[in-house]
Length: 314
Image 1 (cartoon, rainbow, N blue to C red):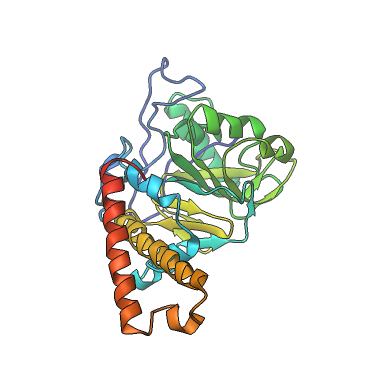
Image 2 (image 1 turned 135 degrees about the vertical axis):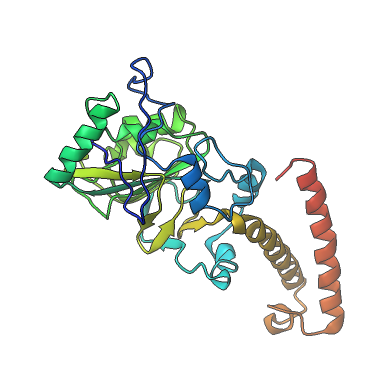
């Protein structure tokens, strides 16, 4: 349970606290606008977003693209992002709660730092000015929207760095309809969490409570290992690691993945015929007739997929 600072450390960017009425300041605080980027600031920092936006200003990657992204692998995302200059969007080395299940959703970011008493005093004062006794780690959790992935920078902390236990994990899964959790830190109550059907990526588990840290930002740019994450990024996790895809590149990533899937489908179909060596088929068919056959197959399958998507089927 931690108090929260009201300033985002950046070039002149302030995260303003909206003063809520006593009636709104319940333990849930689901509609409070506390200690985060304003909508205008969010739009400024995510200006390349091509989609609609959530009420808090985060990019809203469409549900249809999220459904298509469930078939992505890390390699398929890698095929696009580095070539577009986005070389710091992937992180691995996590413990993975359900490695056989994909994690896909929109990033809701939270940043922690080690506790510092003078800063903590300012945070307490800001919390009181907003009508609160103190700020808890549940505040960002209660701000989650359906389909959000809680992405937490806890600087790799184990003891005292446990963002949730089984009760709050259950709350994210059930009450907020969250899509999952990525924490550069720890969780607690692993035995209880293991039976819950929500993806999670974490560095380790520890029995301690969250302590000796402060929240320094909600829905601001955060660092997860070597990756830079923006609020509203499309989070895609598989059995290898997690990608944070800028909204402006989501369409290109999923479209290119369709081509990769069809290429693999055709390649294995030809392998099954038992007539070709790998070098004749993979990665590009050497024989002009085979290459033409593949191109016709690709065109046909892409048309089928377009019709499928138009009918609302991922």
